[in-house]
Image (cartoon, rainbow, N blue to C red; front, side, top):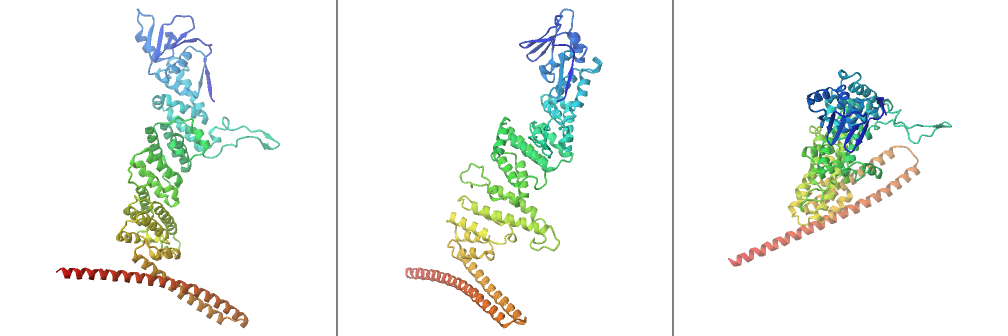
Length: 580
């Protein structure tokens, strides 16, 4: 660490409680009071170095009183800094370091210790020493940390700006170029051609993160902005911001490692109001590029924002960031617990997910307003990627709906709104929607037929897989009309498959008849084809028979219902006629 030694005399002061006495033997004729501390000094050493002391002592001096009392309660650095200045005025040995140079420079400016009051006065000496301090990262960091004690004065003298500019330049230059190789780089001993250093040399872009994380929010924000303005990669800036939030907001450390938790114990926990303010300020500093921060961590940011009750603008900012990366989210991440205290609310925050989903759709559907992403011209780059992300989000929405559908407080309108937000072309299959609807019917058995039919309109029956169609055909919770549609399309699909199978089989047979070959080989191939054809035909025949049997059963049930309705109506009409 840089150090400048001043003065030639040995110790000349003695402290007794809250009082400093000069041991020169001469009676004191000037008392300097700073808070509870009193310094019994002499006028001459003070007025020969300080313009302010010359003015104050001259105004207070008179013929009646030999001792003048000066109050310096507003001096930067307080009594601790003035003690060093008093030693400097008496030419007593002191050490100027990166820890105290900022407070000494501010106090020297306050006391007007220019070269007009003695050659190589304290302002000149501290300015020259600051050049040496700014030569290395570690000393500059210590100087900036000390600025917090005299922040207003340091900002007026542009000392904070000079420290931050020096740190930003060094952070962008790299670890070794920042002057760290002399102070913080580990020493290594080479034995038999092998380095015995226990720690590898730090060369990655994150080497400065830990040091700046100890700064207060006001200084940290300025450092981050300065580093970002000099071209630092957004990923590096984002990692520093994430580390800073995890250090000062305990909620962000619930899923951190054991080592991180121990490291954060050294930092006192701020109040909830301070945490909220810090959180909102850090969110504003996050880079806007997509994918800079993992979606999982962005959602953790959002959950913390809900617990801290941040401003609506901050929450909207996070929801938009999550929405932009929703295609890379997983189900466990988007199941955000509801922070409301109303007993009729759902377990998970449906409205929050709806806003996130709407923002994603507004981004991804913007280029698809002219044409569907399903129709992509060759050479087009954005179409397939957009369709893939839409399909991923569609699967995520279906899984989300299946998870929240079992909640008895889940309203029908909210379920429909979330499900309808995803266009039909984004779902290759409707199995996920069908599963979610079936779970909702189980948890809400009081739904009427009209509401059930409204729910079933959310799924495309033609996109159900074979297993889903089989389950739906025997599902008593579905409306009868939907079951008939499922059976119809399944039967139509089977007939189309059979027709296509016959067409392919005939083409293969004609092709083999036209090509040359031995009769034995041809007969063997025909036998194998006939066997496989019979097997396939048998399976398809069984499937068709099952479907036709289900159709007949449904038709029979419908006829019974119609006959029963007519019988009841006729009986009602006869009773009414007799009464008349």
